[in-house]
Image (cartoon, rainbow, N blue to C red; front, top):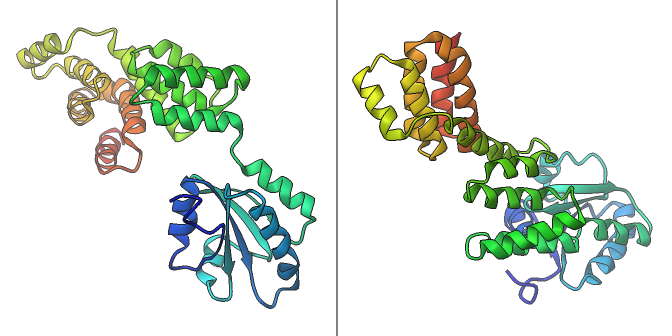
Length: 284
């Protein structure tokens, strides 16, 4: 999708909302105008909104939703009054306002939602993480020097540091980041690696576990080492078997490690649901 091939003002309904708004907002800001033909304030706001969007020269798309024709969308986004203007970026609603507002307010609203220069540098860095990690790291650090609290830059830098096994620095970078899903995933990866550093090698632990299959501690330590290496399926299996052999390990050590693996794998994945249920049944 490019600015040259897509109009900046679209009429959108229930059939194409996800494509035009949710998917479209992955590439540029999409502003949705919930309106109706009988609504006088909607007609007053429309030209101000359309002019402000057009003046952005393709940086913003305006998606107009007639709620009479798309009541499902009105219900989905809890539209209580119109006109309602809602901005979407990266597939999510990020800001909104209701009612007729002056042109200056509308323009300021758009400007606040558009990516900043720092956001643009972070987007560039994200695209370079796999192919040019050194360049990506430079960009992330540049953004964080300007804006210490830029969350996406901190997450990106932490990802790169973890790729180089620099978990301690990654955790420092993440210290000021809120409990988002990605931040918790990265913190859990770093914690699992730190934890496994206290144990023997995988080969040594496998020999120990094979020689004494009932040894719950050996299974627990092997599970930690496997998790640190990213072998999450076998790690969960090993940790579950350790918990079954020793309830004390289950309630404390195993549960702590499993929760971290759940954060890394994804809380709603099938394997997490399976092992969460198994652990719950064992503990309670």
